[in-house]
Image (cartoon, rainbow, N blue to C red):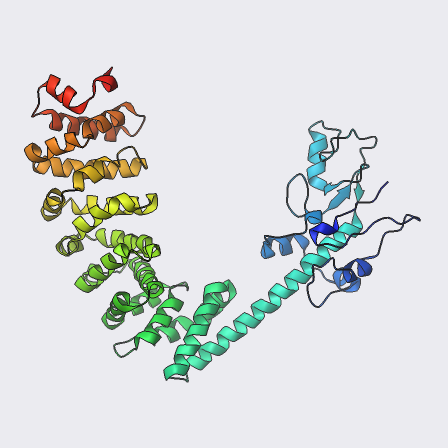
Length: 450
């Protein structure tokens, strides 16, 4: 039977049958580069002596790039029990047996009919696969231990140093926890959250505060840690940094405050801050850095869930600013912005602000049946609030903006019955100032009705 012959183009040294039917041994294959250039090559003895499970290594490594000769052509996953057919093609045992059980007696890759349906374990390929993943696994474990050790050292350093040395230690720790899950777990397990949180206070410099917030936002915070971070002095510092920090720091501040809001004992007074809300609106409107829009709107949405704060949001002029942003937002941001505007329309002040904004109706009408059912729901609710507040004034503006045709589309669609009902009510409200003929002609609905 011809031996499996991988291509050198895949970055893996080939191995092939010689004239006497012998196959190159593992040490030779490894020496020739089958481990993909990983330093510290392990020989056959080390592979055989280890009891590490191949499946476990594959799952933990979760590598994006794997030599193609290690991949089963059927599942496109790394092989753990490779077997070779009489055609010389190799597959994962369980996959090729399923192929046979389906009544196929061909080679899946070449579609040749099989003159022999037996499968032969490809032990050489198995050892090569094992050795390659074993080396990657050892390297990952070593790096993980090095990273955890360095994170532990940095935590100890933070207890002793001040000034610029503290800033440098925090910068390095932020980089470590941002990229290594094992370091994040180690910091939490060793009580690092408390150590780092102590560095936030009324006299903390923005240089230190920015790095601390960048670390904390990447860590898992328990209830005690969140309550500790909700102290007025710490929140005040976060708000100051949100207003004055870099775009990355602003985003970290919003994410951390939103994390704190998940705590069941969170009090709305903590976010009842004019400075916080103004800072959020600046972040959302930042033209040069659009990556701050989503986190900013996400926090603003969470704040809107606290009814006591909605008046303050309206008072800083958030309504017209959000309305003007609507045409430029992507779908995720759009849904958040509409949710916020809908929440604010529950207040008399919010409804008045929506009515007084010239672009509320045209910008909202355009979004009906355009993005998602949720967006349509929020847009309908906003339009209902505005038209109900001033039917004579707003209904004609809405009709001119094409609202009636959009409402008919909603009614005729397969969306939520509640939305259909609200659309019918709004359509009726808009038609009160017109005769049927004028209403139909003004809205250019003849074709739609027919």
